[in-house]
Image 1: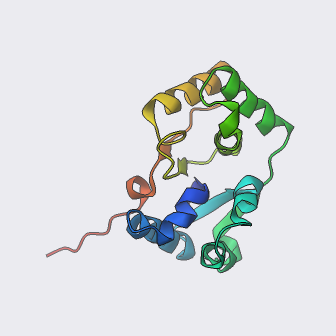
Image 2: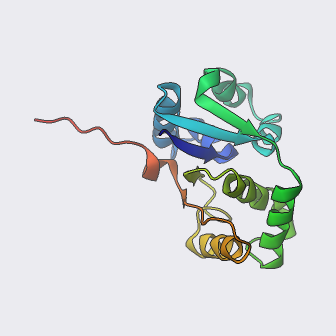
Length: 156
């Protein structure tokens, strides 16, 4: 079974950021080679509308069989609001909560992000998972692309 990886906009933009480009590009290589499935949401696609063309093209040029797209719905909005109520994030960062909710509901294997303030943050992850468990959802793995790419070492 291929690993399904929810990606937010930071991972896509990371392909052009000096600090993150190596790892974001390796993750997209894994998607494009069919080793993993990228999971996107309508939230991610909406956030990309104002991104530079080269960033949008990362998704536009992916083969169709390498990704899945899910729309936010009442269930994901309700779960995102529960994250707000339990102070995982503030209302200002509702979209971040919605990313987590969609990924949780779609039962991805892992959510990848470079957002260290509101997503890839140990204290936030604990809060998201506490809300998930309290509401009968599975826990969610949240990591950076660097942590989830496959390392292929040369045998000498």
